Length: 580
Image (cartoon, rainbow, N blue to C red):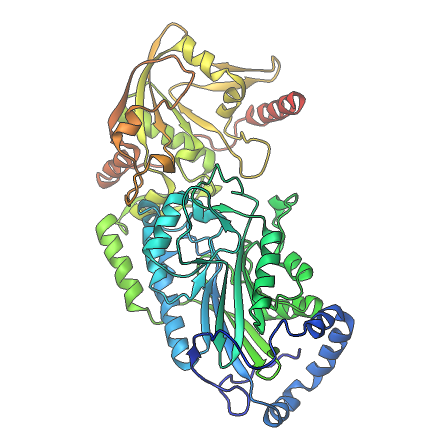
């Protein structure tokens, strides 16, 4: 296919027309009547590539002639986003751009390829996804599918939001056990544009969440089997084009070397009936040059628009209405800038969410003079909680704050940023004797979690526990971990309680369960203790009180990693391998 950059509304090139609902049947050739030509086209890659190179030399001269002499083409545009990750600030401009584009190009479909939640604005965190999902529901999306991060607030919450905002969800590999999927979850969708029938299906990453017991509301089905089933269903529906909306990744990321789930490139090679793949997960910004290179090799158009709402993908297909085949296409990623008009409905909804849940979001409450490493952020937070609660000791698992960034970057710390880094948890206090705490800490892997470099032997599995009020160090010569607790002394210990989605009531938009759940919780099972109680304030209340009093002072406890951490990590990994 030669590169063509003609005006999609030009006379004799594309025939504009209204976007109408798909009829049940068509009276001309449809996919499924005879698929042999399509298979041959995909299989004969060498001949296609030679022809493409020849056409590329003459595309500028020949295009007006071909279009003028032939049947006018039907122009269909797919606008697409992916991996928005709670980038709320970008949403009104994206929506404004899409609405303005649609006015001039009615044959437009707007799609998102998953990962709405996690990272980004803490307003979405506070509302358990409600601010993000509600804003997106006002943006004019025709369909979307969830990504692996969209279970961040639990499957029950995900189902609740799907029902509240009935945007069609492409759920070709979504399943359920105890709770039926919402009616707006569809295995396939068919849309018709001036007689051209386009079929859509969605496949999300199956590496996580295939266990129905672990995800009783929505779990994930095996991707290849689900893809085959969806493609066959669309072929039976006599569609002209098949579009896969995927959250699989353009290609495997570094930490996914052993995964079995296919990538977009795998899907294109294994299922030649797929004409277009609109992808997500790998945060890849696919330039037109790369899109065309992949198309030359596979016969499939694969597009993806980066991440965090920095770009809107735009794919324009020119389809021959007589054959139902793609005649040519253009692909680009459009930067989202302040010059784009904001859509009022999305902007107003977000403004109301900020007013209700975080009215002081933009207030600067501290300034980080330098980058703070994740381990130093953990030690800072543990000491902050110890000082503010009056405890002797704090045990702080890394999951108490946002562990993904390697650093808290220097610069102003707003309330919104603060609430995004540090999660709101109930704090539980108890009295413990030194010998009992040492015994608890010395139990198996728990001892090695006191090393801030600790992980569970695979990427993104950091499981460290940061401490305040005492120290733990590795004696390389003795090959043991030393804990400086007085065995006879009684200490006050504070630790956060980590609730799950099971503790949250239906319809609650805040991130905390009732106190009764926390009062019955045992956050450190196996530790001998007494006088356990839930403190009257949560961790975020302590942070915000200090922030509003201008009392937040961030610092780095260690200017460089401590010398015993590295050997300690090596010792643990060796011990773990021997144990396996």
